Every structure is written in C-alpha cells, then in structure tokens.
Length: 82
Image (cartoon, rainbow, N blue to C red; front, side, top):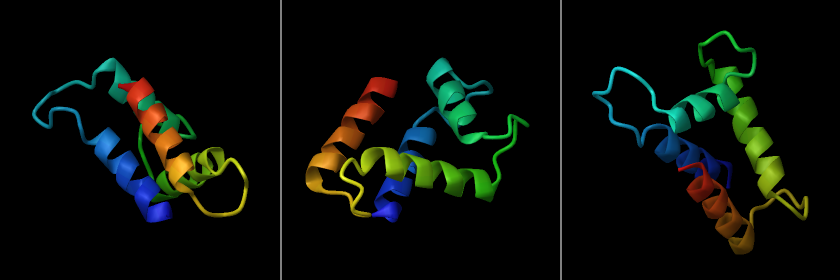
C-alpha cells in the first residue's frame, strides 16, 4: 500500500509541465509539504517521511493497511490540492 501512496505522490508531483521553468502554486505547496527541513531540496529521507506521514493520515482506522474507502479519501485529498 505504501507503493500505491508513493504512486499518487509521484503522479501529483510530476503532473506539472516538465518544461516549465517555475513551479505553480500547487506544486510549491506540494514541494513545501515534502521539504520537511525547509532547505529547498528534497532528500530521499524527506520523501520517505512524507509518504509515511501521508499513509498515517489516510489510514484512519490505524490498521496498517489502506482500504478502498481510505483510497477514495486519498483521491479526494489529491483532487482538493489540484
């Protein structure tokens, strides 16, 4: 399930125009969410920490698994950011 969460993060983060020289507001928000130490760089540790945090937020019943309903909620979160 963490892979699925990472997939959603990947899709969200790389959905911007790759040829654009600047990030739009949604991309900046997403970048800042992942950039936990605010150094304007993303490390693998920050990405993994963000994925774990997102997983914990979505896993509402705290069973260590994401159900179909929890995935639907993830989709709502992603849609609200776009």
